[in-house]
Amino acid sequence: MENGTKKWGFQAKKGMNSTASISVRGVLNRLAENLNKEDKREVIPLAHGDPSAFPCFRTTPVADEAIFDAVRSAKNNHYAPTAGLLPARRAAADYLNRDLPYKLSPDDVFLTLGCLQAIEIAVTVLAAIPGANVLLPRPGFPYYEACAAHCCLDVRHFDLLPEKGWEVDLEAVEALADENTVAMVIINPGNPCGSVYSYQHLEKVAETARKLGIMVISDEVYGHLTFGGTPFVPMGVFASTVPVLTLGSISKRWIVPGWRMGWLVTNDPNGILRDSGIVASIKDSLNICSDPPTFIQAAVPQIIENTKDDFFSKINNILGEAADICYRKIQDIPCIICPHKPEGSMFVMVKLNLTLLEGIDDDVDFCLKLAKEESVMVLPGITVGMKNCLRITFAVEPSALEDGLERLKVFCQRHAKKQ
Image (spheres, rainbow, N blue to C red):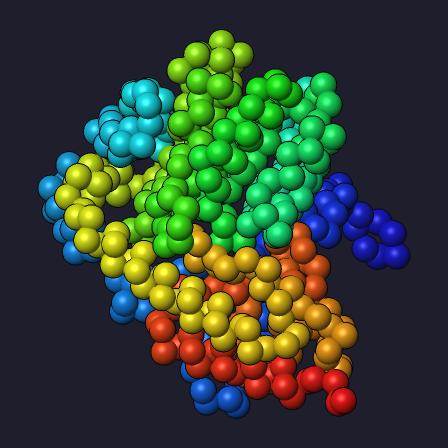
């Protein structure tokens, strides 16, 4: 006892740097706390990728019916196997095989609690390799860095090149890698950039990774959500060149992020991931994790097999029109520069020119004041690794998007430096 206070034998873990401890959810909570409660206008959410609340982004009735059938059958109230229900794994493999030059089997598919758990498993597996480091994109999705910090996995960042459509700086990748580098991460279609990588660029990524002797972790949670001139190509197409871990889910393409139904897939036709023990490590990690709800797993075959192409086309058309609106209206705001029009996912990455603004310290200050003054929520770029930038979500109702971007313009005019 010291000064009448007991000294306890536990202490919270320290050492997680500020970047690694940043999360999209944490920043969104902070922005929400800064909203002006007296502002009676609707809050415009341009900060996160969940459009499911908007009627125009309603999921297909096929998905609803599949869930109803799985629950009503009373056959899916049990625990699922570690890798997931076999029919769901087979359906996911068949779905991914549509775009691949070889065939995945159900044994290559591991079902996860959304794509986030797939990230956790991938990072946990890499962290078990002594001295390993992994290469992450900047800007990127902060969950990778948070998971790596939690697992004490060393990370290094390569830049994405806005002047080249946010392509990977492959020269930087080669310069960063050393004998302990085990993997590089790409996100395609891009979060936060809205980029879609061409076949030719992905081929170069594969060749670079093969040269370095590292695997590619390809985050394809926004797979097929494209509306520009570049079609979506899965990284697994190049798995004969380099082993690929593909991370994905039904969350974004089917607009059901709250269902938390994802997968981790080993694209490994040469057996490299199997022979090196990566597949066994994935199974070991899943053995101590929670599973996706069994009834949602049971609904996956029906969801995938019965969803018509016109549903996907409708969603992509809405996103494409929204991206056009966003890009056009941003051109009217002098202090915001959009280096590349988005072609996929639900986001656009833009730069702030703070020299044209008064009373704004940085991107975080900009977003906090925007939330307070205009009830518009936009994600500060530091959240995704780029200070004094913004990530804007355009996956909202078109009328709400127009309103939100107009409020953004008014805010920038209010804070513009007087000439």
